[in-house]
Amino acid sequence: MTKPDIPEMDAMIALAARFEAAVKADPALEGADLGEMLRHVPGKRTICRGTVQGRDCIWRVFHSPQDGVAGREWVELQRVHSEMQDDEHRVNAPLYHAAEFGLIAVEFVPGTPLMALIWQSPPEAREAQVLPAARWLRSYTESSESWWPAKPEGWLKRAERAAAKQPFSRLRKLERPVIAELSRLVSRIEGLEWRTAICHGDFHPNNLIVADTRMTGIDNGGSARMPIYKDMARFLMHMGRRGVIPSGSRVLGVDGVLIEGFSETFAMTEAERRLILPFMLGIEALIRVENPQMKRSRVRRAAHMYEALLEDLSRI
Image (cartoon, rainbow, N blue to C red; front, side, top):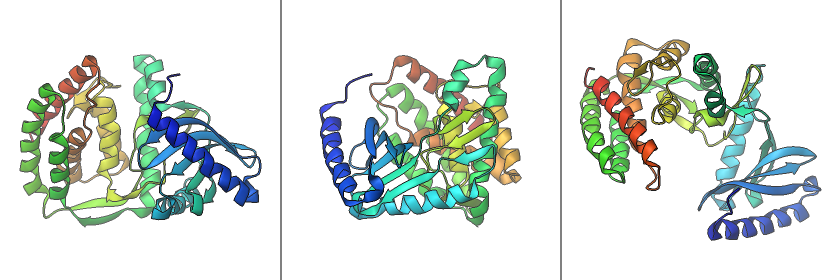
């Protein structure tokens, strides 16, 4: 395991002091433990392993408790947990919340992240493993879905701002014509309605934990109302830009069979299938700016994804 850098160490020391204060203030935290740091998002939150009330948990420690983000996430965690209780589609249970200290504990879920499972499996097994993700997402969004006037222009502007930060010249050259194709689609989408829902917000294969036939979604709570296609695009592009095409059929830079899986599971209209989802795939491709330290092999795979995306967008 790599050693944390100095900012992470400083953050962990500060969070440990805050956690100790919370334990002293709340008898419900007797015996609780703040363990290994899993992820540190500067200025926002730190994710750690630990225990609470005798159960293994994941701690979400928010750096600014006074801003109310932890409270909003706690409300959303409780809402979605109450709705996703069947044997195959679940979310990890909310266990503890201390608003004053910016602490949330959620259930630790044993199993294998879906992306890791895909890499470990023979190619012929991958398509069947990943298709259930569409059903998981529909279970998450269905209760809050509603139709609203489409507003693609704002998404395009967000993508343009992100593309301006692209550090690799090879990808910048491909992103410019992608933006042109998306601009062309904006005029066709405006005036339509698209579906919105309270979405996961960071729906990718590593946030689905698989154990037998059960898929459990993690990293929930930061949800907001947005077009439902954004979560689909996040999931598909996460794999597509890494060259992971389980079915072997690439469409719009991602797995074509998975596109159909999401389309059928959500009973999409023709406009959703042929205009809105392709548009959002392009948006997602642009807003995920590559890290300047990314390996050349990843840049090469991302370029192949862009080329395939651009070719299919130009046909719409």
